[in-house]
Length: 215
Image 1 (cartoon, rainbow, N blue to C red):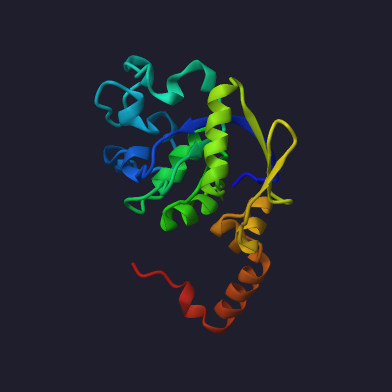
Image 2 (tube, rainbow, N blue to C red):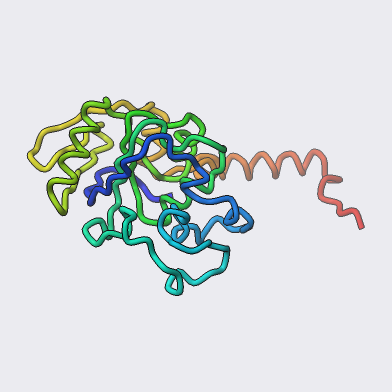
């Protein structure tokens, strides 16, 4: 998982409340047994005018010109601004996979669905909760100023606006530790790889029959 310390990026506004995980990555794309390749189908039913299916070449599909992520001014956005209860619905981990693989490193909203919120941290995406009044102001500024960027300083826990003003946010110490160091659940475990190997060697010495294979 990529480390997250200081990130500066273009902001795209998702001006809808209660965006659920089926909108983020529709159910037909959950058939894949891989953890990659979901970015092209992020918000698929909103991004395209035709029905999307796994394996389609996005270049052959008709994009919806009215959808925010298809507008040239938001091309390359890496920070998504959203409304209340973003990520509600099913608990599919594919939703943060799709957001991260599209290119989003951070999400800003007044609230997130709990399971989605936790899944974001586990997959290298930082969900930031700000007061609704601050989020509304950000929506106004993003729409008023093309190329609007924010800087997110995770160690200091602030969002820095173009004018230099800062918006503080809360984040659990353990979640912050994992993101700053780039540790997902597997990475956290592998920090103790030497101890795990030593334990396995000692156990095998005591119980050598564990190494026998059943044919």
